[in-house]
Structure formats: structure tokens, C-alpha cells
Image (tube, rainbow, N blue to C red; front, top):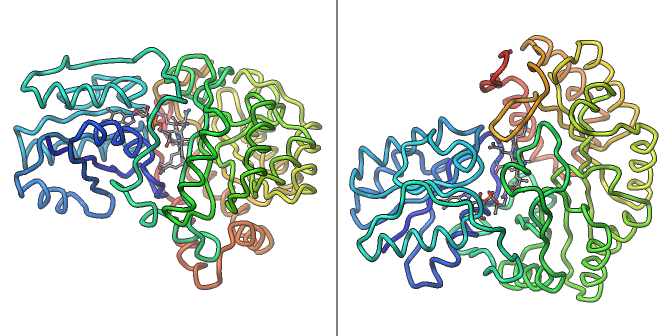
Length: 419
Ligand code: B12
């Protein structure tokens, strides 16, 4: 059974296709050849050319809600070029809205074991049910490590990364105990938190260092610091192992899970950057999201992180229910006052799995462009972000172009009111 895994573009930023590497490992272990194709790079023409060789027996792809139209176009291309090849989909969007894509099989939830089952069922000449899963929560310590050969690490270490360092993604825990209105994690994984033992993570990262020359890991857990004691344990194990590898906590952390002590431990273990989930300066909007607000604490945490030598990125959301244009101005002012190294302002969208307590407020394209321009087109802030990311002068034009594309791109459907 030759399996082709497709990395479908989800937006402007290219990241390592960790989900596909993760579901590939058990299939390879059961003896099936697995190949990866990046549709963002090869294009639909490249996909047609690959399928025309006639040796693919099954295609698998992952879909997010932003990026649904790219997944639809990809599947339409497969249907046309190889109508008999079964298409299996999984990932956040199909897990939450299984009927939205024209697939033979939809796998809901964690895919490691179920994907392998689906491949083996087709290999026996049988047909699996059209929708399977989600499985009972998997024990992360017993899962095989992601296979990093189907998609090569070095093809995805971002081209704007610091001084040619090699980056890749890793997940050390799944799930989150909180239920913030804008996040799909509880709907995706259930409300629980599971984590890999420290030695399991150290083993993966040391292999990444040895076998793929990785210098730094982008940690993509739902909430890495959910349980500070396990973070301390992991930091101790990393310090003891002396891997010579750095890591960045790029998925927004809740400030209340952090303390000055934990930030120092993280820095000592090789962490160079954290991202904070800050969302908005509007207390009523924060409370409606299920987030307490303690602006004083955020200020202290940012200062503590900076004095521990960590870079700090803030994630903010615009267009929340009940938010006004004045609230948005306050959010930008707050971001400025915090002295962040970098900030990212997204416009809230009611993707499946989110639960907002009212219609999203309208952010016009003009307002968004004006706010973004005031923030991003600013020499001091630009230099600071470039310094934290380690951007070299020759990389500046490509970074500026990406930023411009992102600032001006039209919003996808926000299901509510579109801007
Ligand atoms: C890294 C990441 C990013 C990065 C990189 C994105 C990129 N271009 O690749 C950045 C920071 C850029 C990003 C941005 C955004 N992200 Co994001 N991101 C993630 C994150 C943290 C990790 C993804 C990952 O690799 N997970 C690890 C893998 C192993 O998990 P997985 O993908 O779920 O895969 C498992 C199963 O789903 C299943 N599976 C997955 N695919 C397949 C395929 C098959 C065939 C099968 C059988 C099974 C299967 O099996 C896997 C193993 O169990 C997730 C949250 C999370 N922890 O997963 C959010 C997440 C994917 N992001 C999300 C969102 C909403 C966004 C943004 C829209 C946020 C915003 N408002 O700007 C933007 C959009 C960016 C864009 N358009 O480019 C949502 C998606 C929700 C949805 N309904 O689709 C998530 C789930 C966060 C959340 N909890 O709500 N993101």
C-alpha cells in the first residue's frame, strides 16, 4: 500500500507538517511505504503529475479551518486525477466538522493509531467506515516519535530564522484544562492535559540534534506551562542532558501559569523566547472569553521574562464580541506599554470548536490596516522583532514582503460579520 501524505497550505506561514510526520510513523512501522508531498510548493500541477505515475494507493491530508478551501481544491484535484484512490482526512477541521470535505474516510481526533488501522483495512481489500474516532485519549509515552523523513526537517527550517539555524516543531503535551472562547483545543482533545515523560522528550530532542542537526525547537503544545511542576522536571532533564539545543514556546502561554522562578528555569534549560496569550485590554471582553484579567501580573511577567533573558511575543485578538474601536486602540496602547519584542494581532474568527458569547464585532479592513500600519511600520519595533528573530539584513526584504501580505490579506469568513 503506497501512502501519499499531502501538506496543504494553511496560510502565509510555512511550518513543519508535524501532524503528518506523527501519523506516518506507525504506518511505516507496519511496513507500508509513505511519501510526502508539499502542495504549497509543488502546486496542484505537481500533485497531478505525482498521481499520474499511477502507484499511489491512498492519500492522507490534514485540514484546518483556515485553509479549508485549499483542502477542497486539493481533494478535487485528486478526484479528477486519480478517482479510484481513497482520500483520508483528519486534523482540527474534519475532527470538528466531519461533513465539510469530500473524503472517503474522516478520522476524528488523535490519528496515530486510527490512520494506521485505516491503511491496513484498505490493504486487506476492506473498506473502513466513513467516519471514525475520536479514540480514547492516547498515552503519549507509548506513541512512536514522529517520522522526520517523509517531510525532511531541513526543508522546513524557516528561511527567516536566526543565522541559518535549523528549527523544527515538537509537541510535549496535549490538551488544556481551560476553556477560552476562541480556542478549539477542548473540543479537539477533550478537557484534560496529558504530557510526555521528560526523558521521552529529551530522547526526541537529542535525536533531532544528532540525526537532523536541529539547533532549536518550536514547542507547539496547547498550553506548555499548564503544570509548572512537570515543566521544572523537563527543564532539569534538559539541563542534565546538555543537548546544546534551544527551544521557543511559540504557542501563547497563559500569564498566570508563569512565575519569575519558572521563567529562570526555562532560560537555564535553553528557552530563548516565550509567547503570551494576552488577547485584549478590554476586561469585559476578557471575562466573556473565560479569562480572568490581571494586567498588573502581565506587566510583572513580561519584565521577569525579559530579565531572565527571554524574548517575549504577545498574541492579541481583535473583533471580540462587545468590543469597540476604542477597546482596540487600548489594546494597541497596552501592547506598546508592555515593551514586548514582538506582537501579533489576529482578527477573531468563530471556527468550529470556538464558543463566543455573542456576534463578533466588526473590524473594517481600513481600521485593521490603520492599526497594523501604526504598529508594524515603526523602525524601533521592527528592529526589536528582527533582533529577537535573528533576522539578517539580507532577509529583511522577504520578511517585509511577508508582513505586508499578512497585513493586507482579506479575512476569511469569520462566521458572524465579515470585515
Ligand atoms: C503550530 C500552530 C500554528 C503555527 C504554524 C501554522 C502552520 N502554517 O503550519 C502558527 C503560529 C503560524 C499558527 C497560526 C494559526 N493558527 Co495554529 N496552531 C498551531 C498548533 C499550536 C500546532 C499544530 C500542530 O502541529 N499540532 C501537532 C499535531 C500532532 O496535532 P494535530 O495537527 O491536531 O494532529 C493530530 C490530529 O489532529 C490528527 N490528524 C491531523 N492531521 C491528520 C490527517 C490524517 C489523514 C489523519 C488520519 C489524522 C490527522 O492526528 C494528529 C496526531 O494525533 C495548533 C494547536 C495544537 N497544539 O495542535 C494550532 C491550531 C492548529 N491553530 C489554529 C488557528 C485557529 C490558527 C490561526 C487561524 C490563529 C489566528 N487567528 O491567527 C492561525 C492561522 C495561520 C495561517 N493561516 O497560516 C487552530 C485551528 C482550529 C481549527 N478549527 O482549524 C489550532 C488547533 C489552535 C486551537 N486550539 O484552536 N498556528
